[in-house]
Length: 188
Image 1: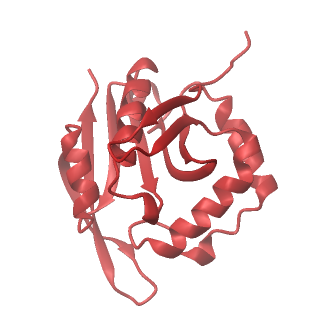
Image 2 (image 1 turned 135 degrees about the vertical axis):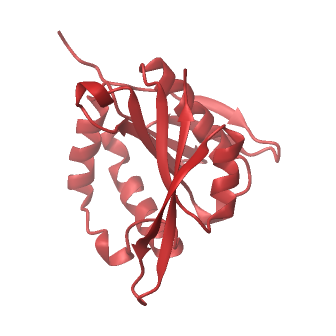
């Protein structure tokens, strides 16, 4: 049996401000865009788990990872594109492959700084949740920096609820810490 994995063909969306956004699965051909996007995000956001120095992925390594992700029928990696530029990413994958936990998925979401607060995050999370339901997941989970109120508010809009906090869940280069909220959304 041939496994084609999860894939979302390109869908076009018009935001309230008139901006045209394309949402689609990332493919191995997008590796250079993905590497550049993540370098920008790690350099600009205190809310992501990695520091810039921790992102040393080559385009070839990213292409191989994307190809593997494309073939996985329980994982989806979506990109938001504006005029050919990658401006947002989100993904889901299983929390575990153990039989008692296969109903649970975990997700991540980011939007480039110049494209935040325009509705792209909402579009991505909505699409991600719909596809996770189609994949048979019963719940979606995530961790978010507690002080990232804009992200927490977005997740709340989509019925994510806080189920705990990991105190000092992230440690920054300067020795300071950030708490992480654990959030969950029921899909069934």
